[in-house]
Amino acid sequence: SFSRAEIQHGIEQGQFEPFFQPQVELQSRQVIGVEALARWHHPERGIIPPGLFIGVAEQNGLIDQLTWVILEKAIAQLAYWNSVGLHLTVSINFSQVTLSDTRLSNRIMDLLSDQGVAPEQLIVEITETVAMTDVARCLETLARLRIKGFGLSIDDYGTGFSSLQQLSRVPYTELKIDQAFVTGASSQPHLLAAVESSADVAGKLGLRCVGEGIETLDDWNCLLQLGCDIGQGYYIAKPMAGEELIQWVQAWY
Ligand code: G
Ligand code: G
Ligand code: MN
Ligand code: NA
Image (tube, rainbow, N blue to C red):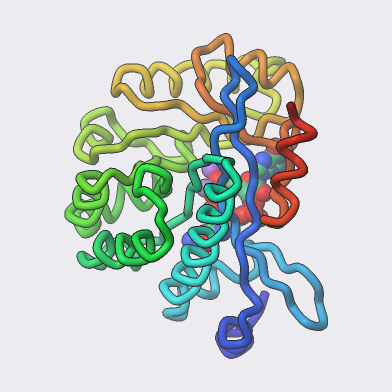
């Protein structure tokens, strides 16, 4: 992985941008949103995936800066899609540091109103592990975001051990089942059981259920049958640059 100085330099040089992975309604096949995933366009080493810089950025006080870069570019992209009649939600991954800023919702609102994007189009993703360990520090911010109309998603669901009681303390709108349980669910009973119970939890809490890591038509059908609403995964599309999405959407229909 990279050093703090290299990442800092990359941020200053504007080398980070979001890629976008489509999300579709399983029942109707309709494209309803995208997840923004950070990429680093390194001048010598090409496109660098987040696994090689997110951890370093989190441990070295750079994640907040990086998140704002991704957020600003994702919102600009969303505004452009709105302007051509493509109305989508964008899901953004937030780290604990960013979520502990109580002014977060106002700061994002300022960004949105500059661009004519509604808060309902933005979904804040928080991993189950962060949700379990740091929720007290983030609760106020999360509640404010929800009141303003932002979506709140619990990401990588199933990798932690949240109880229904813990989950119900935060006004989530969505639950994303971790890909470790989704990929291959139709052929492996222990995965199937995990997906089924996650979809049940989503249902009990009134949350929209997203399955991440759909790699085959069998995965798709399996999730649909278990009551999952939305799918994301390589079977649908890999994350892509913003400029590619409109063409992809046209080809999909
Ligand atoms: O795109 P990829 O599958 O390589 O993403 C790997 C991980 O990096 C995922 O867990 C994702 O949540 C995380 N990630 C991607 N972009 C961002 C980002 O902008 N901020 C944070 N905090 N995590 C991100
Ligand atoms: O934020 P989160 O940890 O959920 O990030 C999702 C990650 O999963 C991204 O890095 C994305 O590239 C990856 N991903 C999305 N769909 C698939 C898939 O179908 N298979 C695999 N192996 N990875 C996927
Ligand atoms: Mn995510
Ligand atoms: Na996930």
